[in-house]
Every structure is written in structure tokens, then in C-alpha cells.
Image 1 (spheres, rainbow, N blue to C red):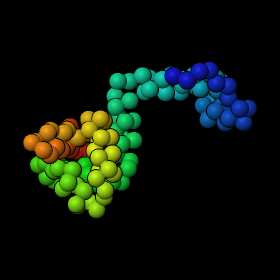
Image 2 (image 1 turned 30 degrees about the horizontal axis):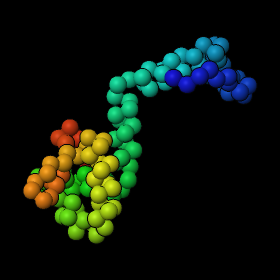
Image 3 (image 1 turned 60 degrees about the horizontal axis):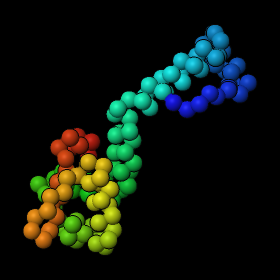
Length: 122
């Protein structure tokens, strides 16, 4: 949870008007809720997933993998018309986040969408 904050006077008056009580009490309750969310085990994982899938090409790659059993980097590169370096960069982010699993297969790497994320991907 972030450090102690003081409310600007206008916000303090608004909170007192909304709650009918001292703004400090309501503010502290809200800050407690923020702290609970930030400290939750799922918070960092969800933030990472949202950050990784917020890139349109990564979301598109995940959607392709949802519809296929597995794809290689070359297949993804051909389908999206991206350079090998760009595909590699996107795949690294997807694999590191746990959204995609990578499995070496002779001279290629097979990528699969982790089943846990199938419902999150369009």
C-alpha cells in the first residue's frame, strides 16, 4: 500500500458530503481496500497478464494459439507478416508471463496457449 496521503480540501468536503461523516474515516477505509487488492496474490499476476495482452499483436498471437494446437515462430511470422525478431520479442513476453508455453521440437519451437488463459483470449 502506498504511503500516507492527505486529502485536498475540496475532495475532503466531497467525501464528507457523500458519506455524511468524517472524510478521514472513509478515506482510510478506501485506502485499506486498495492495500488489500495490491497485496492479493492474484494482483501481480493479473497486472502482468493485462500488460502483456494489451499489445494488439500479442493478443492476436494468443488468439491464433487458442484456435490451433500449436504453432512455430515461423508460422506466426508468416501469418502476421512480422519480422523474426519482432515475433521472438512478442513470444518471449508471452512465454515469460506464463500465457504461452514453449516446447522445443527438433529445430523449431512449438508454442501453445496455456489452457488456464483460454477463457481470457478472444
